[in-house]
Amino acid sequence: MDNRNMRTIGVLTSGGDAPGMNAAIRAVVRTGVYYGIKVCGVQRGYNGLINGEISELRARDVSEILHRGGTMLMTARCLEFKTPEGQQRALHIARVFGLDGLIVIGGDGSFQGARALSNAGLPTVAMPGTIDNDIGCSEYTIGYDTCLNTVKDAIDKIRDTASSHERCSVIEVMGRAAGYIALEAGIACGAEVIVIPEKEFSFDEDVLRVILEAKTRGKKHAIVIVAEGIGGAMEMAKNIEVATGIESRATILGHVQRGGSPTVRDRVIASRMGSKCVELLLEGKSNRVVCMQNGRITDVDINEGLSMKKDIPQDMLDLIGKLSV
Ligand code: ADP
Ligand code: F6P
Image 1 (cartoon, rainbow, N blue to C red):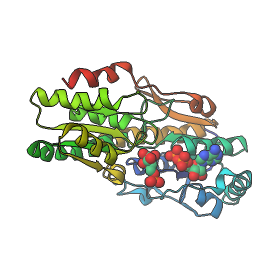
Image 2 (cartoon, helix red, strand yellow):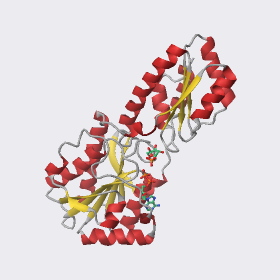
Image 3 (tube, rainbow, N blue to C red):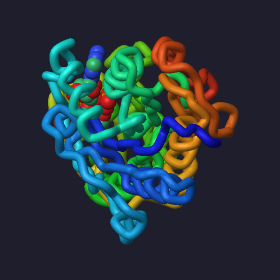
Image 4 (cartoon, protein in one colour):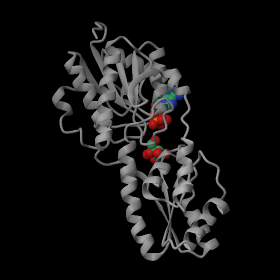
């Protein structure tokens, strides 16, 4: 664990925030302190690297954040950093502040930035922080469990009113191009219909018919969950009402899904991954992504990680149809 070239490391959060990012920052700082190295917080993602918004974080600076959503370092999307000039500026500023290594907490866009810095000579490792759970090389991304629980709470509430009014509720959830949030929240909440980008669907067969059959079987409500990668919840609710005569409402859950105190699962995995990032740098490793595979925290090369595709298990797709009878 003794890499004498690694005396000062930076940590930043990038892309959309996710509950558990603070737990990861805390783990990075405290692990760094444990091994006797200096840790600096970089604010606003790659913007902070370009603009020099970098300052030391000591053990007590990360007190009282473990249980908070969001990220104390703030996050942002930085277009300038996508350009070679922006990356050179970031690299120069990292040198000015004496950073020997960098830890990036974010999604796959942020990983591409981490790869660029590694290739340019700044040892960088990344870990997955996004509610979308859409990172190919990792079974889990920080924030996903908290998000699912938020979505579950919201859908349970919507179900109460949908049942009382015998309505159909169409609920649109986040996930960018991925349907994990929709799928798992849908299974957890007993949705009649789940529409995700990973599975082709026919409005007539997979939505209308399922809703009408459910009504015939005596169901008082219908819950339809639509992933944002499909979108159009408002229009779908209108079309369902016109075609079935069942009063329908649409709810787009939006950014409520990104906030809130992280669950135990998010705090624990964020802590383990954050700590692992520091240890990788101390072992002299670079261009790695910390990830979860077969339930274990491990790491893979960023190029390999970025090229991996994540499939939704067929048995989970089949479950939707089986359980909505
Ligand atoms: P996420 O990390 O959640 O996928 P984004 O895709 O918005 O979020 O990426 C976050 C940031 O990572 C971008 O604003 C940009 O600064 C950086 N980034 C994204 N793609 C690249 C790329 N191809 N090369 C370098 N940096 C990138
Ligand atoms: O990646 C997280 C996420 O919340 C996605 O689910 C969503 O598509 C996107 O970020 C929303 O981004 P913004 O906060 O910039 O609207």
